[in-house]
Length: 145
Image (tube, rainbow, N blue to C red; front, side, top):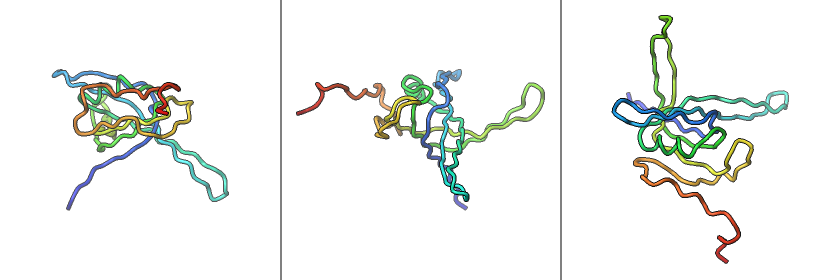
């Protein structure tokens, strides 16, 4: 039997990313995504539902997300589900299902209050470039005609 574990999510960050490092100095960033769903109920009324997902990313890309993302920013992530379990201080068993992010894309649109164009600014997959993503120029002087 074949196995397949792939997650694709597009949402907004629920909090500022939290960067830490492993003992061997690998960057780790944790953040949350809120993914909204709107549908029409049987009675014709509009319904909304929000799914909150914890995400974790490792390496150079984790540092990039930490540097350029903040609460409310839209983000597209690709990764896999990871199941973590541990024993709490009170002795009870705890567990959490999270997304381990392997690739991501910054999305246009800015903060939580701004309506975005949905255009992709920069994509990171495989090996992230060492340089930070360039911000698109803004202003009338940048129009080529």
